[in-house]
Amino acid sequence: MVAYGGDEVNALVLDMGSNMTRAGYAGEDTPRVMFPTRFGYIDVEEEIVHSTEQTNGEDTIMSEASEQQQTTTKTTRKYYIGDNKINTFKSNMEVKSPLKDGLVEDWDALEHIWDATFNKMLRIDPRNHPLLSTEAAWNTPEKRQKTMQLAFEKFDFPAFYLTPDAVMTAFSVGRATALVLDSGGGITSAVPVYDGFVLKKGILHQPLAGDSIVDKIKQQLEVDLNYTITPHYKIAKKKSVEKNHQPEIELRQLEGITDSFNDYQINRVLNEFKETICQVSDTAFEEELICMNSVLSSRSKKTFEFPDGFSHSFGLDRFKLPEMLFQPNVYDVTQPKSEEDSEEKDQEQDKEQSEDLETEKEKEKETEKDESMQIDQEKESKFVGVHDMVYNSINNCDIDLRPLLFNNVVVTGGNTLFKGFNERLNYELPLKAPGSKIKIHAAGNTTERKSSSWLGGSILASLGTFHQLWVSRKEYEEFGDSIVHRRC
Image 1 (cartoon, rainbow, N blue to C red):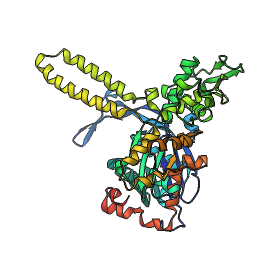
Image 2: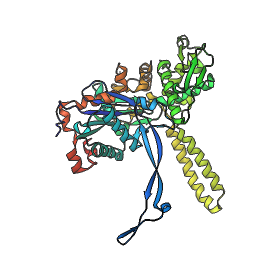
Image 3: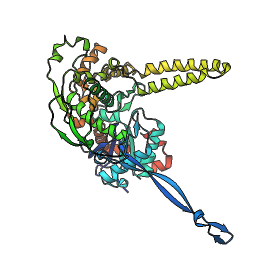
Image 4: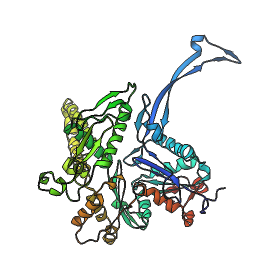
């Protein structure tokens, strides 16, 4: 029997983000392992031969050789998890994320990720360690129950606890009450936390984050410089060329390259570009006033060399690209689903015209409802700046709590590491809420900023008084997976 309630036993802390997954022991200041949340997989078809026999009473009559065997094809999926495995080229390997909108979508992949984390990377026996796992603040009850089932039934943990990542981020900077602004790879969210509990009515999140900036950078390079990125794995040889000259390279002869793997490798290069070149303007960036704005135009350019040897110096563009976090309407950034939905609705309207007059009248009423719903969806799908998210989230809370939340704004996630991000946020928020005392808290260390929710979980799980909160295996067997809603 594992005495998980004391300080002697190291609990495990697992934090799965949209871009990176972190795992390690409670009480430590950094995760033991950090690896991409995305995984690679190859579907392999295997032929299984079944032998058929005919029984007649006690005797067994064998049929002819052609009728004895039946072949069926079975598709098995082989997973590749971890930085080295996912970035090594394998023919026909696809790359996918188990998360969608910050929530788990592929549970089979999640099980393999957990297995690789505990058994191959940390090399521990899950039966000897309790587990604390983080979740998105807008997680659904069904997915919470399924996570607890996975922990107890598949991995046989002695105890388990599920907690919102925003609460752990607040704990990591020593705050029980805070407004947590988290901007990572796939999701940007603003979550109010009061006394260690999430205020559900103030939760705001949108898929405008690091991946959106990467897509915009890719478009800008193709339009402005007529340049297409060649990722590392395709390059066999390259020659050094002068700045702004097209690269001279020899490509490797590879077969079975999938679009998802190629896009993932291109995005790795673009992420490096984003982290080294891009910078947030201290004040609102307006292209019309670039000539008048001598501060930005006078700043030195930064040069970036791509894997194929192409290099270019970037000036005002490096301020323009991350500006979509604060002014998404300038770029007309909308959710990709809206275009697909509008195409589907146009096809539906064309089909409706070919039907009878009676059905047309009924369906015209339905299309009017659909159009009104589409207008509402388009209004909802329009993104807002991160400062607007903070302001709107706080305003959705009780008026008595707003001064506390404005005074405890905690920023976390990779996008907040842009140079000038905190200064810009400190400039925009007083304009939205004049007279309010605004204070922004941010970890100075890069690793702490990226893994603040894991660090908060490490602090919480290492406390001696936390043993009262663990959900034990006995409680799970007695009350079932619904206990996660009462205890976590």
